[in-house]
Image (tube, rainbow over all chains, first blue to last red; front, side):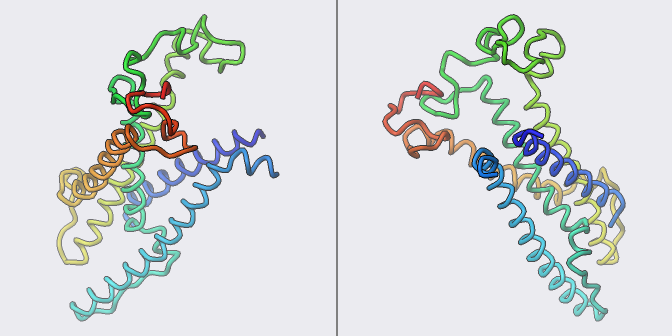
Length: 30
Length: 230
C-alpha cells in the first residue's frame, strides 16, 4: 500500500477503535 | 524506508508522542487510582480493592479520562474548520483573505466542470458525491467529536456510578448523568481551554512570527496581510 494511505488508515483505525473500545466499556459498566 | 520516514515524519512524530503520553497517563492514572482506593478503604475500615495496570487501562475511569480530552480536541478542529469558512480575522494566517468569506465558487474549489485531470474523482462528479466529498473533512472530524463525546459520557457515567456505589449511594440513569455537574464540569473545563488557545493563536499570529512554520506568516509579511496572501 501507498505509505501516505497507510498513515491515513492507521490514524483513522486508532481513533475509531479507541472510541468503540471505551464506549463498550462504559456501556457494560466496567 | 528513509523516504517513508521523511515523507511521513509529522504524523509519525505525533503518533509516537501520543502513544508515549497515553502510556504515561495510564501509569500515573493507575498509581493515582490505587492511592485513592487505599485512602478510601482506610477511612471505611475495609480492604482496598486496588487494580492491576492491565485492569486499569480497560476501566471506565481511564476511558473517561482519555475520551474527555479527545472530544475537546476534535471539537476544537471541527469548530475552527467550520468557523473559518465564514468568519475572518484581519491580519491572521488562520483566516482567509477578507474577500473570500463563504464556500467560494466551483472554479476556486476546482469541482465539477472546473476539476483538473488529477483532482480526486468525487470532486469531478458535481452531484451528491461532490456534495459529500466537499464536506468530508468536517463530516469525519465532527463524527469523531460526537463519537468521543458519547464515549466520554458513557464511561463517565459508568465511573460516576461505580463511585456512587462505593459511597453506598444509588447509581444514576444515563440521562441524569448527562445533566450532572460532574459531566458538565469535565466537558466545559476542556472546552474553555481549547477556545482560548484557538482564539489566541489566530490573534497572536497577526503580529508574531515563526520563521519556517506554515502556522505563521512569512517573517517579513506585513501585519495587515490576511490568510495565504501573507
